[in-house]
Image 1: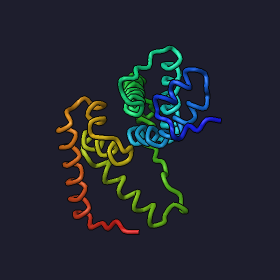
Image 2 (image 1 turned 90 degrees about the vertical axis):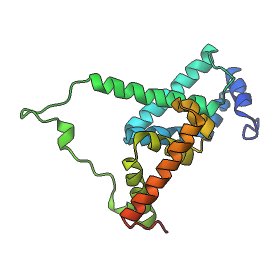
Image 3 (image 1 turned 135 degrees about the horizontal axis):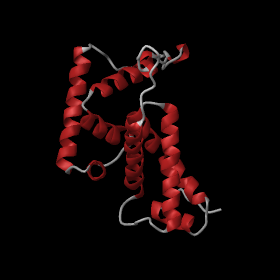
Image 4 (image 1 turned 120 degrees about the vertical axis):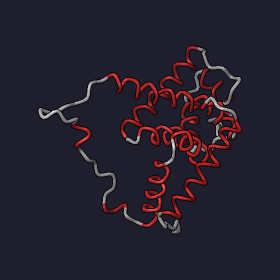
Amino acid sequence: MKLLKNRTDQEIIHLYIQGDESGLKELLDRYKNKVYTSIYIRVKDEYLAEDLFQETFIKVINTFKSGGYNEEGKFLPWVMRIAYNMVIDHFRREKRKPPVVNADGYDIFEILTFAEENTEEKYIKNQIDTDLKQLIRLLPDDQKEVLIMRQFCEMSFKDIADITGVSINTALGRMRYALANLRRMIMDYKLTFQV
């Protein structure tokens, strides 16, 4: 058995293309949390995020098998771009679907409310996570996107700039504004983030 943990992404991809299925497993183990989190933050639905995550890696596999993978870039920014495009495609498809309307003319999904937490999840750490996520949701989309990619996906500003199609300075500026806005909201709501 080969030790894949010490290999680069490119070496693992070459092994996978040559038929070593453990290469794909190693790539999944390395990046599944980052890719899934980036999808989930955008769609805010666990099941939909899982579906889009699977579609992302199906596209990765198909690209590898067809010989279409370009080795010039890094694997993570490439797969994050695929995931981002999957989310965009999903929302485009959703816009084309007619709303589900009841007999009174109301959109069913505007009326329904879904419980996001159960009682066991009300520990301090989970409450902090919940409060922070709520504040992040209040940020403008461009700031939220950069913050998530940097803090939760641990991406470099260069990779963020490439994926979002802006300059590195713009990505840095969005991050600075996101952090400033979060600090302001924390003070406005008099929140403390301590465990």
